[in-house]
Image 1: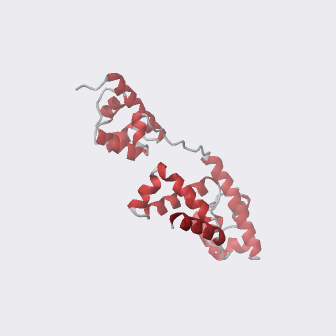
Image 2 (image 1 turned 90 degrees about the vertical axis):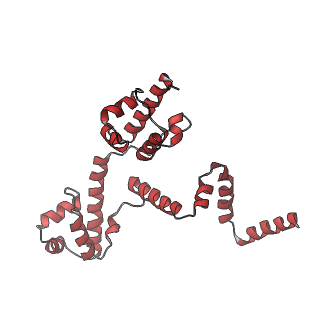
Image 3 (image 1 turned 120 degrees about the horizontal axis):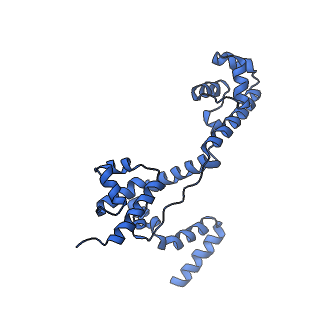
Length: 219
């Protein structure tokens, strides 16, 4: 049975949009599907059939839900991050934190310069944010100033904070048993999770009252 041409074109456009959303090239996807870029282009144009396993591979590679390919789900919105401005801001923030830590430890600019064997002007540029601090130099200064290097890390707010939180949540999720993972991933179980959340913030007296009420009902 031949594939309906209009549907093939729609599916091809969905695949193209998912690839562009994931910022992957035609050559990348062709390699994943073990085909040529020319053949892969025909897939996106709806001129070459694609199998279900191929779609599954693309879903994994492009981090798209399978339901996206048949219209029941959408691609996850990606946050816009101005990486150049973010890096420039972080250089200034790290410079301020370095200066604060230096003053806390009662060290001079020259002390830090001697520790790294660099001109004092270099340290001044680091602290003002005019020059980025090479990571290995920051490690050395952190040790010298009795501060862990993560003291300078933006891990509690901003894009990196959200990124680290997502990684931590995924790590905790995959540490659960397959049964619990399936339970948490089922939207129908959200009411039980909400109930558990409310119970978790109740004091002992409130929990005891609820338990007593349940016993009265079931006795």
